[in-house]
Length: 331
Image (cartoon, rainbow, N blue to C red; front, side, top):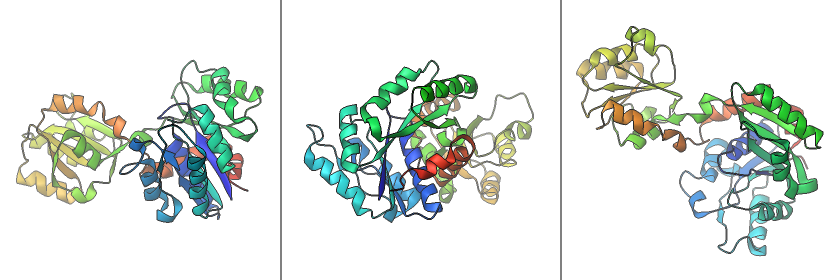
């Protein structure tokens, strides 16, 4: 069995996405593979946890439960339990996500307990230096397999390439520089409804559909259908008493109409939404208030949707050393 421990310096760097995608790609190559988060804090256990996301994407047998990190920090018992949990998965390759609540010393001890190669995931930021990466890498010494620079900004390619060259000149391999991608920040129709406290009038069976964009109907200069056709995989916020705009939105690919002011639509809109397979969600807020509330919805985005898994794998094909990634987890 080959274990890989995926670590980062902070939350939100992309460890879950990388671990799940590497496990998926290993399985596609013919190996038995699993992804797991063997240890985590109380907030990282249970519903909507990373382990639950692994299970949803990879299957019940390709993930394992997350055990709580002891209050006093990692002890020998917790480390042994983590090693057994990974071994019990019975996979050729296990990609284990390290909790961001473990400090560098404990993360290094976990890598030793798992006898794992270490893969660092670092979200690329303007001004990031090779010294920043070296600081992340230092605790792992000979176990370090390399670094993935993740979420590189659209106009930061030159800066990221220069950083990668500096990191490699210092002796650490950069296995990928993954750009930002809108789909990876998407949320489901259900998440939108929950976030706004909305109720479904129609299309609850479409609740797992992924929304990448939000448009607002009411303040555009262009003709409605032209404006709404600028984005697919979208939700549109429209006052419940504007059937003209609602019908324009439904004439374009739309996953959900979010009808504001607590107003239900006319029967014809209900019929058309059913024909188009769009969800209808009614919220009590006004349009401006709903827009403001959606400003924080990205915090609810999780890597637990098949479309995200597929997109991350595509990004690796385009922006990674695929041979080096394929070798990870091979005993």
